[in-house]
Image (cartoon, rainbow, N blue to C red; front, side):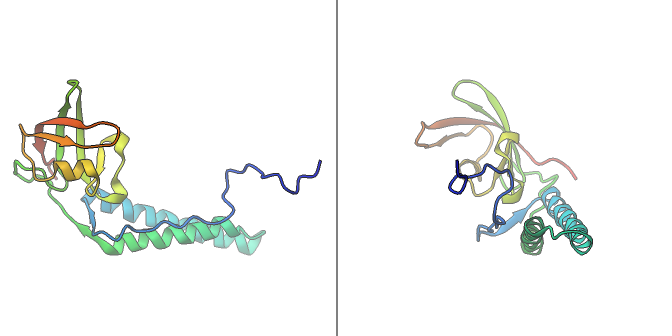
Length: 167
């Protein structure tokens, strides 16, 4: 059987993947800025390593291209970062950098942090400041109930606490 028209499964993409900035302000927490800088440094080191291998061995084309694209993205994110350092802030309303504890209508409690886009990780409770849930929470205070309307069903949350961890 000819394999000419059979798509090969491969974990490596055939073309480099380009990451796009959202175009919104690039607000970051202090920890987020540190992670952006660390990632840029890791990618710069990887690029240097791949360039060295390219001279000694066969070219590592796609891997090198991906490292350069990723490096350009992270360097751009570091340059455009707007540090919002609310650590230790004594405020009762939810702002960027806040750690919020909420309870849903079923009684389950969850903790969220409002962070920058590159820091976001919903599974870890780190919400992108521009996400619908973060937008619903921003500006609210402890004791307030918030309703987030969604296609899959609305979410009702009671804000149990608002805090800003120290430096």
